[in-house]
Length: 219
Image (cartoon, rainbow, N blue to C red; front, top):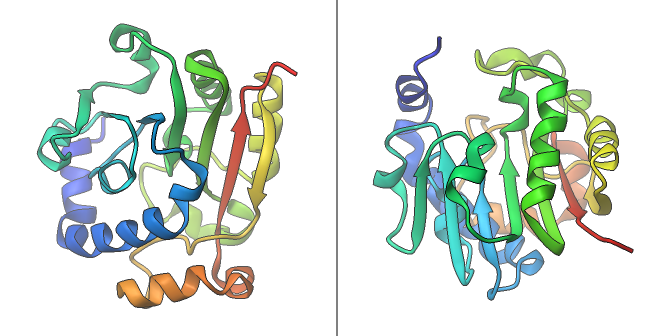
């Protein structure tokens, strides 16, 4: 079994400050426009909490298997050191926004991906949203497998199909959005991140991750 704590320390520890600066810009100038500040937001694989720390919300919840999650989260975030598959053990309320960034590719199978999406739907409020930021193997090619913990190959269309099976409706999609990894040679200074967000034309050339929003709509 892979030691999650050691894996992520080796992969991200030297980048924490830079990654947080990137996500601060991403949250302020992109993700926040899809998230009402009065929402209850849950990040189901929070990692070093770059998203959940920087997004504005009424209540913030973070799941992660890394036992160090509480060290990274701000005091405003409720941290849960557990698999999000055990949400029923920890959550006593419905969630307005569930955020899943670079998590589904780590699951054991496509069946597990569908189960994860179904579980998210069960905990969403009516008209609640599942927001997915996902490496798309259409655009990454073989580099998708450069990370030892990637197990499931996914595209935007396979995610759409799984979400439809689970009863979620696609409300918004950017096929090519962010570069594949923060370890790329693309400039990471906050100004260049901000500039990148302002030039969607560049996404068509540099974006290897898809951005999808699914809604728990009863209509």
